Amino acid sequence: MPEDIGSTVPRRQLGRLLRQFRNEAGVTLDAAAEALEYSRQKIWRLECGQGSVRVLDVKAMCELYGVSPEMTEAMRGLAAETKSKGWWHAYGDAVPSWFELYVGLESAAARLREYGETLIPGLLQTRSYALGLFQPGSRLSPEEREQAVEVRLQRQALLRRRLPKPPRLDAVLSEAALRRVVGSHGVMSDQLKHLLKVSEQPNISVQVVPLAAGPHPGAVAGSFVILEFPTTNGGRTAPEPSVVYSESLTGALYLDKPEELMAYEDTWRGLTALALGAAESRDMIKRIIEEMRHD
Image (cartoon, rainbow, N blue to C red; front, side, top):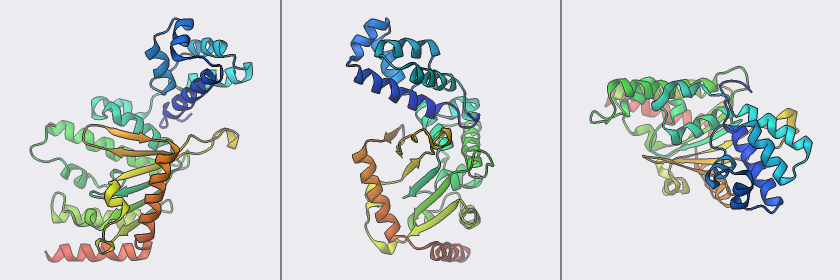
């Protein structure tokens, strides 16, 4: 598995399989913990895809659950992949633990659908705009702010990579996010010009929901990302299930239950129905740049 994708997806795939086979074997968490002489917390952590997994642990759990030798071997292979580290580990505390999972999933995604209600999404930000998001009273030191921005810019490399194939990014932005001045009018004008430039890439689309559209589902949902994943092993393995990511000040939600995904799919459909087309969106961005020039 390529280094930049890291271990996130195999950890989650292996965790789901371990939970599935434990349930099919009719073994409770407590019974598995007692039989394997593990803590209940350790088994729960492995099933949730948190952290690398020892091949020895997979072998012991597969034996307990009566998993076939062929599937056991496949799961041992996944366990080996859980030990690779993504590029973001080099940034240490600049990447909060709750955000590490997202960066790993983002790197592995085949398609990202992102709605920005209040700000330009991180994957489309310029350095000056990203720095401007940190207020003078920020609890971060100048060095920490710079490192946080570097992480954001490093994430953007996935949209230009050659291998594996870069993901498709479909961004829908509220007009409010385009008009909210971050840093200065000059910084904001450069940011909007950057949006026009990146939207010319074949794997990136940018659409705008005008304020004239009135209240809409995205205004209630707030900013979010829907991540979709590719099939593996030449299409023989089912893809990682889609995930909705929604961030707050101190943490994030990872939503993957069918009813949760359906709610956000409905919201996305509502947003794209209200959004201007690609050409009209570009025209609106150009108009806002022109307005800022005269302010």
